[in-house]
Length: 121
Image (cartoon, rainbow, N blue to C red; front, side, top):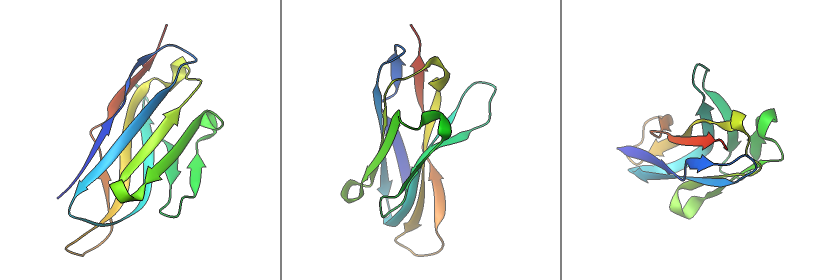
């Protein structure tokens, strides 16, 4: 089995920063793309940022220049550094990873349980 666990969410004032982490564990053979999504109340889940195994990144227009994504392949961990936070960044943030398990089979997408980020004064 594979498990993704996020951490680092919390309450921050506008203009502040937070760093989210997501660790993948279990029967992992390889990890391809790792992503961060978010879902605000009453809205659909949206892709915030993604990073490939080779380190190529992609960001939603709404976070470009403010958020960065990185990964530590040795630790199966992906990070989301969020700077200049705005109230509209308030959401539950989810980690997603495309993983091939050690028992073979197909690549599958796995999700974490989510971590709440609230930006408010």
